[in-house]
Image 1 (cartoon, rainbow, N blue to C red):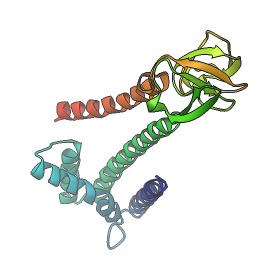
Image 2 (tube, rainbow, N blue to C red):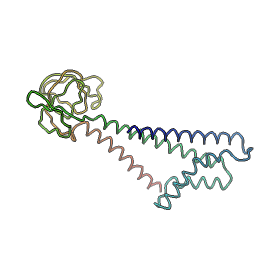
Image 3 (tube, rainbow, N blue to C red):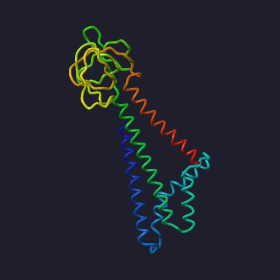
Image 4 (cartoon, rainbow, N blue to C red):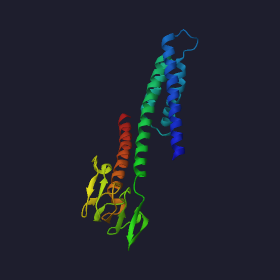
Length: 237
């Protein structure tokens, strides 16, 4: 995961650097107004425009896919043909900035979903006789008695059967203050036990618990956005 994160950061830094260089070339092109032997706008055309042209051509030829890239590529080629170097570089830069922001937002959303999944409880303490054993949350069955110590995450949804405590359930309910729990009160998976130990009876298996349902809902929202983008592209075509 760290390697992927470092790779993502390096890619973002490289993209930002290229955008800055392209933007600077357009500023110089605007200020010099064609007085240089070679218009600096060509830097933006090559850096930002070449990837757009490549995506447009490959998408059109290989996938018969007409999207915004094709129209932008046509605009860049037309501007170059007319000798409007600044306009061609400007269009390419604006398109690349939009693509960068889209990729950045998608990457942040994906990292948030992965972080949420990583916070899900991994094990629970199953009460056997006078002691407990650690078992994976996926092996917990409805009706089993579990013990939750101070600082532990509640492994699955259930009901308190022994003890009193205070639980931080802001992740599930949004409440800013810990909530007191007594015998007969319900507790939810993923919430944090703040005080003393308590016993509980599992009411749901891990896959049906509140935390897992919330993580699945967030993931499905991200998938719906992807489908929505594809639908928008089809209508745009």
